[in-house]
Image (cartoon, rainbow, N blue to C red; front, top):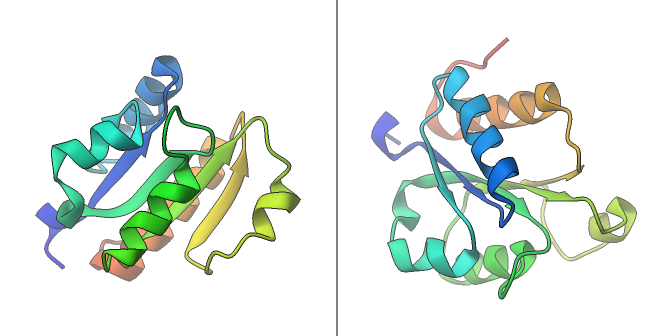
Length: 131
């Protein structure tokens, strides 16, 4: 996969969280797109570029899990981090998802998030892992 198709997508309806995550990822030279909802993301028609999502679990309209289900049905094979401040992570971990989905609570440890994303980008894009 070429580097121009190796993009992380942040979807969170809280603009301060969304902007903070974008700034964090840009500090590590990670190509990032951000949207306030799953529907806005789908309307942008950029699915081919995305290899990793950082998704709020509770989004207005389609939830983060529902978006992942939709993308997987369409053949997308990337990875994601589901982030939630309102749902018990143990409950999420019991959902029918695969090993490429990581669960984090809000507020998330930025070092852990970068570690997860860097590992997935190295695996999927051949990018070196960020220390």
